[in-house]
Length: 301
Image 1 (cartoon, rainbow, N blue to C red):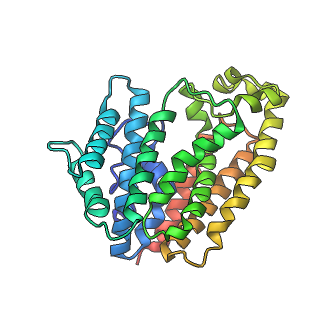
Image 2: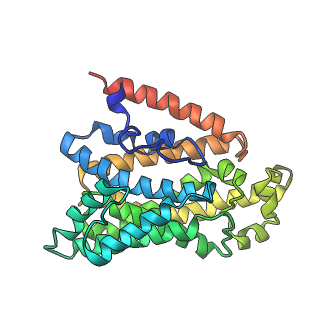
């Protein structure tokens, strides 16, 4: 059974996180473990890079004395600028793998694009991981989605360069659903991603979201109806481009199918609970454990 768990391969428990990051990794990427060995290793490697950076940034949000994400970024800058792995760095294996992929194989422009995208992803983690974050406009929120998940989806392996823009749009939808899923734990940490202009449009105060007091405000329910029934469809429509691409590697087809199923689960449970994000984590993660159990049982020989 352990061979079917991706969380053990991407060091899910290495840093403190807002939620159960091992279960999140399984929810997001358990499908990787069914891939052919060589393809699976490529995916595990990239996911490990991405999740490590995300966890280090989140860890600094929880523990202000932690300097690991800042050190991680300094090591990246050293590698980027000097084209050498920093001596004695903590994540030597990560930087050596990145150096091998992007700095030692310079036969086309793909490496330069990957370097720029990875750099932009780390900059986004630095910009958006703080507890005083307030997004003023809906456009600011969408920029955040694009700069975070939009960029890291473009880093994933076996992606045709012609599909990078479409992968960015798919990543935007992915991050939207992750934010919806994590609404309770983010609120507990004083984080509210709803833009000020949207809160004001529906007469909802930010503190009502953060203190779980919005369920007495009819404006909250109108806000969520707008969020799911008007705004989300515009994001999903753009993401459809990736699903229709004739260039998708088989592993990307599995990623898309798995992700769409995950989005349906998040939205179905959130609607079933009448947008009660306080109750959502208990119900949702129980469903994830159940579904993963069924999935793993089918994978066993």
